[in-house]
Amino acid sequence: MNIPFFDLHRQYAEISDEIEEKVNVVMRSGQYIEGSATQELEQNLAEYLTVKHVITCGNGTDALRIALQAVGVNYGDEVITTAFSFFATAEAIAQIGAIPVFADINPWDFNINVREIRKKITEKTRAILPVHIFGEPADMQEINELAVEYGIPVIEDACQAIGAEYHGKKTGTLGKAGCFSFYPTKNLGALGDGGMITTDDDFVADICRALKTHGAGRIGARAFESLYHEEVPELEEAMAGGDALYDPCKYYNYLVGGNSRMDSMQAAALTVKLKYLDMYNRKRTDIAMRYSEKLRGLPLRIPNMENVGKKSCWHQYVVLCDRKEEMIRYLGSCGIGAGNFYPVPLHRQRAFRMQGYEECSLPMAENVCRKTVCLPVFPELTGDEQDYIVDRIRRFFGETE
Image (cartoon, rainbow, N blue to C red):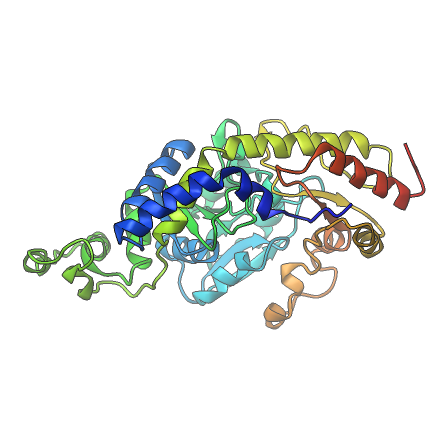
């Protein structure tokens, strides 16, 4: 049997007619960047998440960078984040010249440890960036209480956590802003790159929209007025011309931002997939529960399925194994794809060697990185395939059911 770690073909085959019909509408419209398709997606996502503003962008990394800039993080500032995440979490901080300050994680859910955050706060701290790792919500109540105590904004990295919930609220709506990725293998995946920022703060939303489009035009002017309390009347004359494809206002720039717009075909595909997101997440949950039941008793640390007030979206199903590399190789020899997330904690990446973190400086993150094995958990995984995976894991440990 050959079971990939993730299979994009199966999901697309089930809804290809809907996606192609929606994308064809975009292709015939001539509006290929943003436009009505993107507006529809933003509105639907705002309703799904129960959040005031959704700002789509080019990818999840841009979402993180833009959100950090929008809350005032600048060159030389410090942002506290987890040592256990995909590189983009820390990369987005460094891209704007800020300094990622890494905190250790909880042993039970691999999320940032709130006590460790407190230890890292200094007069240079300008934001806290928790990650809802593998779709499991971080301890947002405690993080927010700490942030209020010190007057520091919280930006959620919810790139792996769309549809997850914390005490009845969707992740990405629990801080000053939330950031998401629509990379194809995410729970809500595009046909290419895509991302979004969520916020209930009008000011942050204006700044984010301006920064993703060169700080230009009407949204750039609005952001400028909000920042500097100056009126910019010059757009009145410019707005007299233009049409759906030509906007003369875009040649008036008010902030130095960048180009991180979502193309309309990605928005169209995501609009279709959003209808199925809760079903996909339920299937992931069923798979996770089945793994946990059938792997019980083996020398593995399996996920805690009883986190009170938290509802994971199971972006990954992760076990801890003392024989990690051996297990991944064995599963591969059996035709089973397994993920190694993550082999190196962020504070030990060579890209951040100048920060001088020593080995064992964040022991829990380092220990988890040595042991994590991710099993296939995509929604289209069949029961027979899951049974085969469990059987081969049991054989690896010399056991059979």
